[in-house]
Length: 202
Image 1: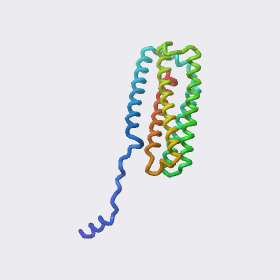
Image 2: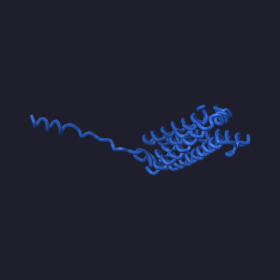
Image 3: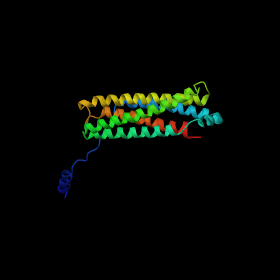
Image 4: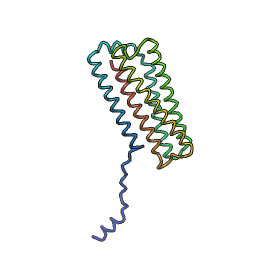
């Protein structure tokens, strides 16, 4: 009986325990966490000021059009979907399709920047500045700060797209693509919170 048990044990294949894997570069994750902390403090202070001056913030929000910010939300989400597709396609060694996904993510990102720039220019032409009042100070600070992060995300994705031309990324070689995707998702997440707080919540 004991011999049979030993034989059955030996016959059973060893269970494969999946290794814990952090997608992308660890240094980028520290940078992402630091950026999230900065935005978190920004949002917290915004909430405090809004609680102290509800009428002022409500009046400022009444001058914000939801059409462009909603379109920008859809553009960033579409860009994130493209980054997910790029990682998946590189993992499948579908080089051309993966590069096309990266290119499409940059197209959506460019659309976001154009819409946001149009919105900001309109506010500046209307005489709105950081010194107008507390609401416009937060509005401009948050949206411009996020705008710069989208620009950086575009630069990172463009660099990955450029380096992918020689087949640098593929199955088991996804760190660069995963790093770019992680950063893009962070930018997307911050925008969703910013959109909800500054544009939607009344």
